[in-house]
Image 1 (cartoon, one colour):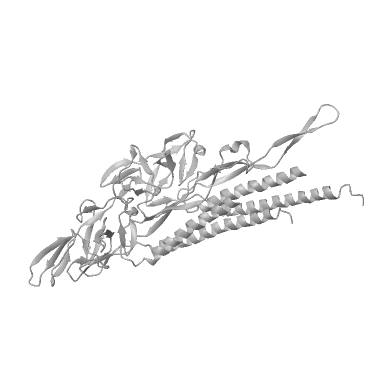
Image 2: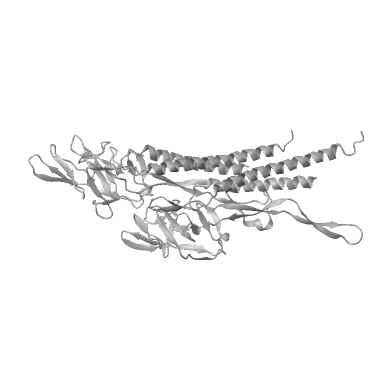
Length: 258
Length: 247
């Protein structure tokens, strides 16, 4: 009976994660460059039926019984989000693969697809949290900044002269699903993601940069809502198996002396 | 009388196993490529009845001492395919399994959730590398899979995925993580007439209406067997306390 209850419990936990992921996706429907999470379910190990516990017919020597389900991993849907025009020159969207790199005050390199950039007091290109973009690009005061699809940052001075201030790089990973989400649209490289590979925008598999646009979240609300219903009903079905276990256990207890 | 109690108790044990298998099917409702299981029952300890009297003992029939689990059978019918639009997902339309490399040897799965691992190989979420015709498939980044199994990365065909079918899938053993292994006797061969669909995922073939109905039947059969134990208990009570009472 413990086994039966345990199977129901694993299913409740797995469906709970699915609900959590769906809720997180829906909450981030307006988060720039957010990638929807997709839980992957897997069955758990199988055990042999023990003849000393359950009567087995001679042919049942190899009978296996499962122990439930679990979430094996939560992958991020790699699909490109819609590119929304904002008209701001320092709003940068990546069309294709890759991440911008930023340096935290602690000196750590983090990666993001959220290209909402600003110029700080020192004229450096920084993200919304104030972390400088890699490689560092500094712009002298007063100029109008444009960013080309290949990452070239150009300053148009008030007198009309143009000056290249630097060139943005993109970072790609063998396994972007292995990146560790740090919040604030930032990710850190891990052993699972592989080393960051620096590439010029538009080269070596990296996407191109679209100035004046931001990448929207790739959350499909209709799919999330359908998923929510599926998760809720599957949760209910799992709860029913626990109820069945409870009823059976009640019957078994009823066998005892009264 | 005691025999009756044991027969009824065997029924309770068997129904409990059935409920476990059903609960596992329900728990794996959302597991891609999961194959549902059914329990089969068989009579337990058949014994022959003889009439003793004049002449040699003559057989008059058989009777059984309860029920036992005869086997847990995996239902290999395909599950419904769902469009996910996610490039991680590949479904097999038709027979066969993807082959993956595990520390314990080759394993097979219908779950086509693939990612690219840190070294650029196509792998399952649990980290097992997916096998092509020539071993693990290195893609290095985003990949597309053609309907006939060609893996295309960086504009080039890098490998062809291996899809293995079995003449006797009943011999496959489930090992968890959506994997099956072949302990021998399953008769592996290349699958025929298979189409691979990227952006699709095969769902579990769990039939929820069937599982819930069977679960109801299992709980009620368990209850009925429990009542039988009670009935036998009462009979035993009478026998012990009332037979031979002259009052």
